Image (tube, rainbow, N blue to C red; front, top):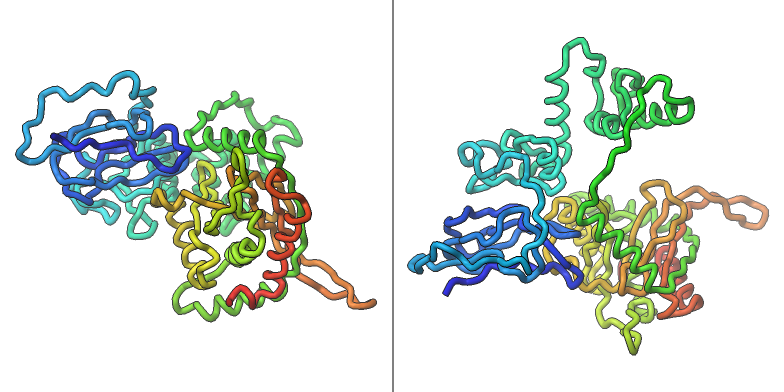
Length: 458
């Protein structure tokens, strides 16, 4: 009997997925543990390994949306007879098919190993975002050399190839051939800005993203006298964007969410971070302020169990483990990998784990278990100069902590002004699980850890 190949379920909330790419052709052989297919879901893309060795027979084509647990193929033993007609997938399982990728398949690439980005079997090492951009721009990935880790093709590589192709097709006299960054050209296309009207402020007159944004703002303010009217552009909803929209709406509809802010004096935390960067420089370990907040939140959750809880149908569930999710922004949306037993990790180990998960999230290499069973979440917008915001809870958790920018402030020592570095923490909590006073006590504990940061190291 052949072994069934299932569409892997990624997390309890997954409702559908797509075989983005079969790594083994129909009728090809695979060994146990080798890559079998690439799964695309609402929140994450990941490679799926073969559970057995054998001959692969596809039951569904690439790009067909299926439900988790559906049978998408079979693995036959080498000496097993393969029927001419496989069992039909049936209309109950196959859903709407997506358009076939326009990008040339990596399987039709040149000789194996012709570029550093190629893997055995003619496959290409490429991030999900870069693969999507290449498909949309009809760019052959096998012609690119990746600049990412281990030669991986990343978004910047595809954008550069797209820009080079566009510019090579234009007359040499075209003003748009002036030096400009790939991101500036991409943004100009999206906004409908004529690059010939943009004054570059970068080195050597290079047009930057900020130059394009300023030109767009000028057009909006002073009228479109220098630009032609642009038609509305519909942007199709990706599976990730649709899922985020549904979950955020459901979270707000199903919970009694409130948000409070609290100031933290960050002077000592800033000094500690600088000392840790120096201490761990030889190992290339560089803690961020968000890492410090995650560590402080994990230790505070030990003292305030109601914040590490969920609202059930007949009871409030106090979670035994403290698994802190860290929100990572991607081009297509937001993903939340989970730091398991965050309170049990040392500061150094936590920094390393946060860096590893963030890199895996951006490269599309997160494993299924790295997205599951979070009990609390930390999300940061401080890098965008945000002073305060209202994060939405990642249901069914009871709270989420927002990290804002560090700002200059003034305190008073008697009549003498004293300069300080301060940061607001924005806590959203589920009022069904705990009231404002215990929520404030939890937030104060996080503040106290950050203001006496030596406690983060013990």
